[in-house]
Image 1 (tube, helix red, strand yellow):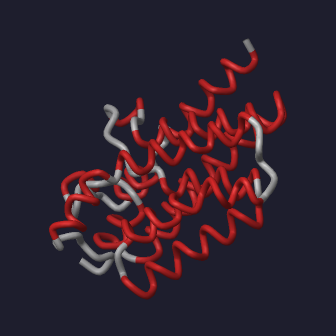
Image 2 (cartoon, rainbow, N blue to C red; image 1 turned 30 degrees about the vertical axis):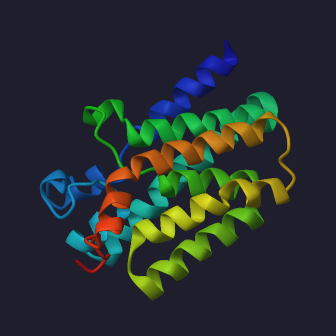
Length: 192
């Protein structure tokens, strides 16, 4: 019963969409602007660096909090499951009619908690790719391709690693429209 409660809390935490909250505080509907996605990249495009940083940190902290709660209840396997629940909550948020973001920041938050060095490396890789190429989806997909190997190198070899692989599946699946635009050469940059 405790594990179910942790998964539910992880999902509900994930359902808090900081992109929507920050945009509403600015009197703005994030769904009606830019790509229509409530993630940090669209907030950056439409509201600027400060609000985007708040969204990025808030969304990552959801992953950290869910994984921390999971570890407190049942170790790394429950932590990974709670992190997965938070990512699912982020991409399919109850509070926002199941219209969520891509889940990258929340997934990176899970990695930061479960394997801090791997999480920092993945986050810095993401930031570096965005800084150079200005395309968040490329950075996100590269980080997700390296997510499971990084977590394995950090020592996760049990069921937690399989749950973390599901995190990658969820995030990459949410990037399907981005992948189509990348292949067509029409993907947006973070600048517009």
